[in-house]
Length: 283
Image 1 (cartoon, rainbow, N blue to C red):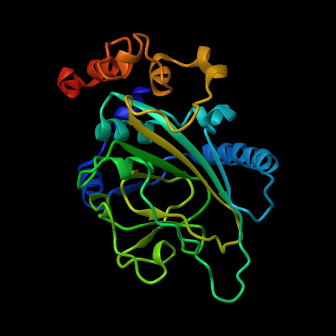
Image 2: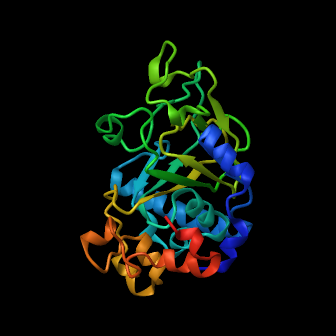
């Protein structure tokens, strides 16, 4: 893992924004050449995915478990500008449990605009079967914006700030397709990343811009949570360093190593201890 990530640890302002709002933006998380390479890989997956799912050119494409489709996607799993922030929020016993590539082509506005809202919290059954209020965080996502969403009507990610501590929210007439009071679009330029609590009420929206909206979601959770994806990485395995192998599900000591990990199971803990001191990984 690149020690440069230690230059991008969670700031006090980011920690407070995450605690208060449930999300924050990391500007310039990606360099311009990285964005270009990721756009090229994403559009190749877009073409493949439309054939696989029999989608038309105007349909929204959603591809889960996309990381193993291209080398450029693997490089984001421990990206220096974001990964230390993930560790500062969740700790060292973490994995990538889910990945999600989304391409929203431009829509043609006809009459009243359909914003295509679909408000939700992530993790589905977790929100029905954990009967506590508020429910635990358990996971976070990093969303990398490859297209420019710095203005509205570009397929923006909408959020209801602070709603990560609410098991339910009040919807106006129209239900989950309407805009709740206090909801805002996240204005994320190309190359930025948004880190958000999986409990945050959020939604995608319609794209009435000229370009497709391209976003890559990397979901990080505690290792004891079953992955939402197949995590198809076997063809990369011999090229992964020990920390990346941890992130993609390795547990050398077996199933017990997910809940009572040894150093062999969580090389990230050893790395953080060596670079930040043992107090940083005490819990």
